[in-house]
Amino acid sequence: MQEPTLNIHSIETFGTHEGPGIRLVLFLQGCPLKCIYCHNPDTQEIKKNQIITLTEIQKLLEKQKPYFSKEGGITFSGGEPLLQAKSLIPICQELKNQGYHITIDTAGSILNDSVRELLNYVDLVLLDIKHADKKKYQKITKGSYQNFQNFLDYCEQKKKSIWLRYVLMPSYTDNKEDIKLIGEKFKDYSYIQRVEILPYRRSGIEKYKQLKIDYAYENIGEPNNKKLQEAKNILKNYFTTVHIR
Ligand code: SF4
Image 1 (cartoon, protein in one colour):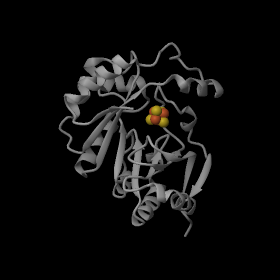
Image 2 (cartoon, rainbow, N blue to C red):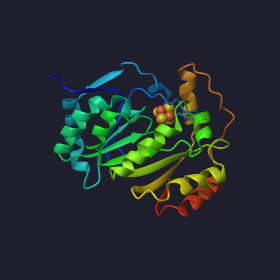
Image 3 (cartoon, rainbow, N blue to C red):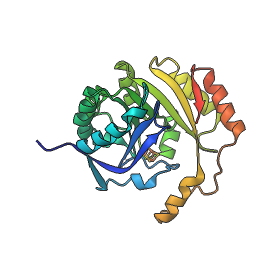
């Protein structure tokens, strides 16, 4: 049988931001959302970039294993890793059998039979909420809020642990009422273990320039500490654990 492979953009060894502990992070190629604040526009194209096999992933994990301690493991990020759910199933199944902690970093934009099956082998979902307001969700992405909601509901039904992540971008996602809406909508989801606020960073703009893609938000600055703290305080009214990353 042919070995399962993934189409990846890049690899980060010893990652510390994409889930608990020290992690091997694979950034998968392809994403349909095209968010206005995307930091990695070069991951969006669904083109064949770099292929990695299960055996190669296992070798990388073997090398890193001594540093994982109780928390670490592997994270499949992107792009949108759920686009490659079918290929991820046998890979995650095998890695789970070998005892690795598996995290998926996704915007929850796809829910099909492959994604449902894949979730059986996933320990933690890092779930980006782009916006809690349906119309505004569509202003900042090319996706549908309903897909996100369906994915989140499925995770809750299957008792999947979730870290909800929210990018705070001035003028687009920093409105107090919008942040309150996240709390109101999701406070009763029992499997949301924490909420992380990710400050919008302008460092991605360079990539747009290199790729010769027009970037319409060059005049938007990064959120200041006051705004970040304000968002955190609002979310703390609804969720026990809220971090600014
Ligand atoms: S979901 Fe992530 S990778 Fe996809 S466009 Fe949005 S920010 Fe970029």
